[in-house]
Each structure stands twice: as structure tokens, then as C-alpha cells.
Length: 196
Image (cartoon, rainbow, N blue to C red; front, side):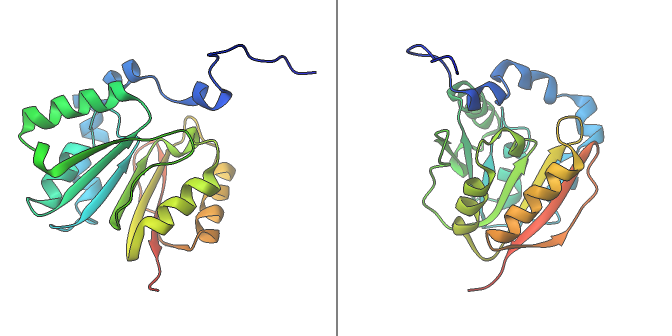
């Protein structure tokens, strides 16, 4: 028999989300040498695009994405944690990119966007999602025909077979594998929504 949780107890799905304070260790000079945002993203992003950065943390990829989409593009940063979004917004202001970035506080079961996307980035966060099929289905339905998603998972947290399962779920959602780029300490896949 399972124990009932008291009022205010966090559901199990929240226990896997990276705490806001831990993101400080992910945004440093060493990481830029090993996982340079511009090198990773520039082959996929075009000026004027609408881009979603899911689970952006404090903006490690969001700020470079905002530069890549240019003044006519938009980056939507969606995160569960308000503290992450607040820190990201502070960095956007400091970089003078606040006009290109829109913040969305997601819920545990919905990203919460209502725009069509050219590109979606889910970097080292997919393993935190309690329902990957629903998550990938929501992304697939938000992508424009021909839109792409870069899904990257950390090798230190995710097993190869779990990543393969995620790719299978993405295919079931209507996305096809275009490439599997090499990214330091990561499994990565570039997915594309076929034309409708």
C-alpha cells in the first residue's frame, strides 16, 4: 500500500527537475569550450525564425539563439521554474536582447505556447519530463512543416536505450531523424517535421 502524500507535497515528477541554483555550474567558461552555443546552434538557425528553448535554465542557449534569429526573429523560453525565467530575463536585459525573447512559465503537463515554430531546442532536459510522448507530441504539433528540433540528452543521466526510446516516441509523433550531431558528453538527434 502506498503512502498518501500530505497537502502541499511535491508530486514525484517535480523531484527530477534540475533546481535553479544548480544552473550556475552549467554556465561557465569551461562549458563554452566544450559546448559552444554558437557552434552547436548556428548550422540550424536562420534570421527571422521563431524558436523555442525548452527548459532554458538561465539562458545559456537562449541568449545566443536571440542573437542568431536577429531583430526580426523571436525566442520563446519556456520553463517550469520562475527563478530560472527571472534570471534569464536579467541576462536578456543585460545583453540588450529583451525585445527578441518571450518568457513562458510552463506547467508540469503542458509547455504552454500557441505559436508555430521553425526550431525547437530541448537541451539536457527531456529526461526530466514525466510524459515524453505527450511532450514530443506537443512540440510536433507546434512545429511548422519542415520545422526542426534539436534534442540533446546528457550521457551522465540518460542511458543509450532510453534515448533510443525517446527517438522512437519522436517518430511516432510525426518527426523524422535528419542527423545525429556530435555534442560533447551528449546524445543528440536533429528531428524534422515533414510537410503537411
